[in-house]
Amino acid sequence: MSKSVQTLTQDPDARYRSQLQAPTSTAVWLMIAVITMFFFLFAVAYRIRMTLPDWQPVNEPWQLAVSTVMLVMSCVTMHLCYRKSVLLPSLRASHTLLIWTVSFTLGFVFSQLWAWQALLAINLGVGSTPAASFFYLLTGLHALHVLGGLIALSWVVFLAGSGHRNQLYPALQLCTRYWHFLLFVWLFLLGLLRLT
Image (cartoon, rainbow, N blue to C red; front, side, top):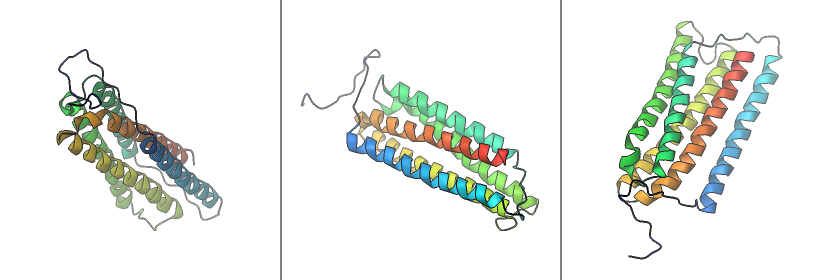
């Protein structure tokens, strides 16, 4: 076997380090920059639209607190999974934490749907008021980015489970970066909605 090929070890004290390939890491940073500008422009449009006389604020449903807790927990478990994958580059070492990450992420998405249902129950649909429209737009776009991250994470788990286990650490490093970014964007949106 070539010396350049990373191999698994049964030594519990072994540490696994792998440098991210520059193009992949740069691509993730570029994607984060584009998404940041995307949400920033929507936030500017939101603030401008607020100044018009027909603006009626929407009281955000309490389910947003549940969404926030779910996203924070998914970030925590993702980070712990990434840290654990440094020790032993196997899916089994991080399997439970990955399951928790996926579960909390799905919990976030379902709590978002729950919040939308709460607004619909009081007749605040997508087109009912400008504020309601922006609420659905901003939270929906964020949820789509979360689902995109979940698809990427599922692909990472699949590759790791199908024999590409030595790619687990660098892939989790990228996913963890994206998950923390999603949490930052969510807190920004939550602050924007609450303070206005």
